[in-house]
Image (cartoon, rainbow, N blue to C red; front, side, top):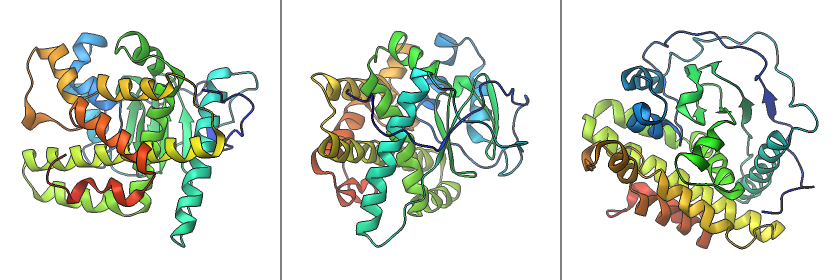
Length: 291
């Protein structure tokens, strides 16, 4: 991926040197993240932490329950990883601004916060073990860059475009928030059973995968920055974090009813669909019978 020299977003903030407060959040708002399923299913395998603790964190605290004092700074010059994240985020801003404009709407880009260990958010206390996640309460994406090492070494998904896919997926959740999709899904989840809530979560996550594919489609058209093997890196990342793959690793069996993000095949399919069509209309995972 030929990303060096491309525009960097100014919406990246660095809290890595600003320790967040500890403690479990109360049950309430929900942060959504591509990395969260990694922990929920294989927390003991990778991180050696109590899955119940993680599930409590995934639920998040009540919006606004965690307050941040003072604006965090931008990442320091010369931080290559932070520069990469800023370039990818900048590209998502360019792509989604153009797409929203075609629909006579204004795109409001999210902030992306770099942190280490723990970070206060409007969705409660976030932890590195959750992986990258999006908090609708403050419309921010949170990433501990060490997750990319986990993605490559422990989950078997190396490569810069695999990392770009992760960021674009979280931006996809922000797009869902702006379009009002997230609010409708959360309302439906609360009124249904656990199985129904999981099924809605799967459709939400697969749509975010498709939105990530849309970004890849349009960014490639604009920049031509993909190199041989880049697309395969993203597809492999989608496969490695599929519910069935993670369950086989952690439990040795697959429980379909417990899926919250979709199977490896589904995640690959919807990312590829977005990449091939570049159309938001083709990413409506909620109106198709078979995923």
